[in-house]
Image (tube, rainbow, N blue to C red):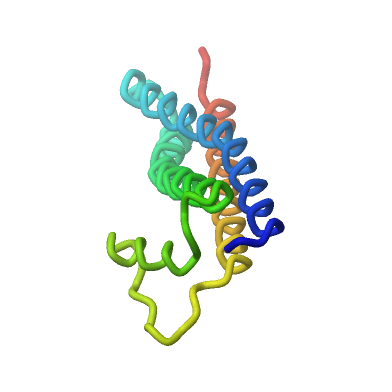
Amino acid sequence: MTDDNDRTTCAALAALLRAMALLALWGFALTCISALVLALTLRSLSTTATMGFGAVVILGALERYFAFRLRFDEALFDGLARNTVASLEALDRALSSLGLREPPPSQHAPRPLDDRVQGTRQLMQRHAIVVACQSALFLLALMTQDLS
């Protein structure tokens, strides 16, 4: 991958993924607060609030997975942009040797950059959806809690 456009695409996506870290922090904070509320006040919570906070914690596991994957992708795209990753073929071989990807057949070309970018963007969208669901459930749990 020596094309300036490809390196620029990788650099822009890496920057976008770094910016997405704020969303990951928000999801993590919602998970921690919900777990703390459940741990401290479970017996006094309404059923709806308990289920809402519990759902936020459960979705937090999925959110953490997405956040980890996006952080990993950010480092890979940054490496591609800075030419510390030699080529897409070398990246596929490295991921395969680490057990993170099925070994590509030797006669096939490496996975195209456009497919990788599209996959990462879909992962970003799914992560944002999970955090939005966490936020909605957290708000629902707060609104259904009896404050008296």
